[in-house]
Length: 173
Image (cartoon, rainbow, N blue to C red; front, side, top):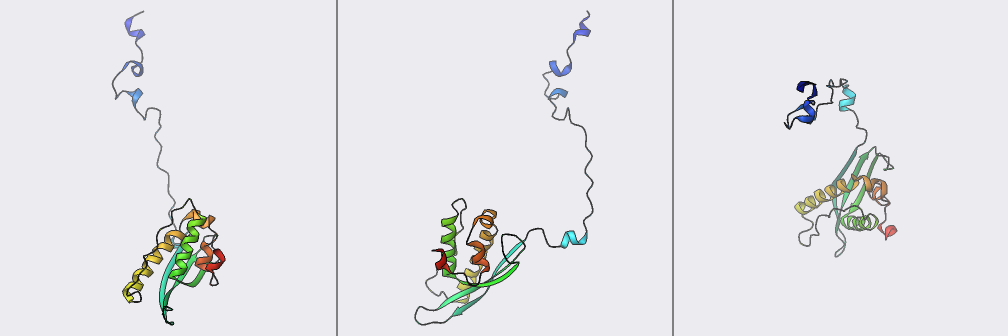
C-alpha cells in the first residue's frame, strides 16, 4: 500500500482547533428563518391573554374622637386572571388592614418572600405628602403581591382582601 492510501481523515489527525471536526456547526444544516404572520390590529392592541391592574387611589381621612382619626384607600382591581372571582372590583382598606393582610400572607405562604409595607408614620401622618407617599407604597406592595403566581393560586386571603368589600381581618386571625 502506498502511504497516501492509509492517511486518516483530517478530523481524526488534525490538532487544529479550527478543523471541521471541532466545529460546532459541523452537523448542522442551514435552516431558513421562520415566516412570521403579520399581526392584526386586535392582536397588537387587544386585551392581553392575562392581565392584572391594581390601583390604590382616593385616600380619605376620617375624623373620629381622640386617636380615632384614620385614612383609608380605594383599591381598584381589573383582571381576567381566573384566580380572581371578579373582573372588576373596588374596595376600601385602611393601613392597619394592610398590616393584618401582610401578616396573614407571611403565615400562609412560606415559599414566597412578602415585600414590606411602607413604614409607620408617627408625626404629621395626615399631611397630604405623607398620605401620598403611603398610597404609592401600598400600591407597589399590592402590585407585587397580587402579581405573584404562587400567591394567585395558593393564597386563601389574597383575592378576598383585594376584591371583597366585606373582608374582615378577624376571620383570618
